Image (cartoon, rainbow, N blue to C red):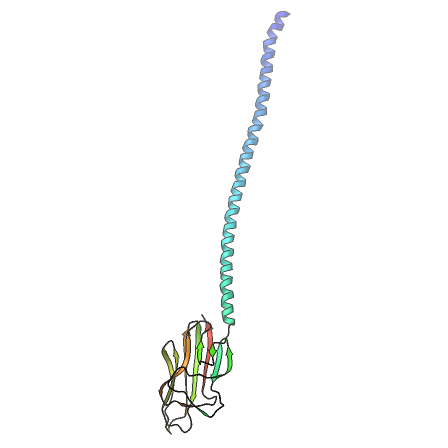
Length: 217
């Protein structure tokens, strides 16, 4: 009986050891699986965060581009809404004729309209408040008894753009007009000056100087 117990004891110990090993192995295996699952989840999260960061950067760039375009459009709209137009003529008081002399510019003292306040009636000079394409026109009327040739021009930055000429004989009219379309930069000055011949003009509104902003830059 004692011998039988001595034979069974090592077998029992071996069985217990085997069971303990299996238990430890079973316990360790799920732990490794959980760890791999956590690593995979963290990797997926990192990928998602990186993708979202890339999308956010792209969207930020698109938003910045849209804002830049909107600002440019707003500035352009503001320019389009800025109206510039004037018409100036001589004061009628103090007689029917005026000696414009040979100095420049010729001051047209009265205005019927001066939107944008670009024209100065004291100096006779138009200073462009905004860059753009402008249309200018000049009308002159000579004194009825005048037989002189009279030439008056529109000047910009030292250059005569166009002239109106009255020839002063009974074969021609005592009126003349000249018009020009030109690019004018902000701050540039445009005015009318005597260029040739006589200097006596009629003071009625038939002698006038007009400028209109057609469209801004």
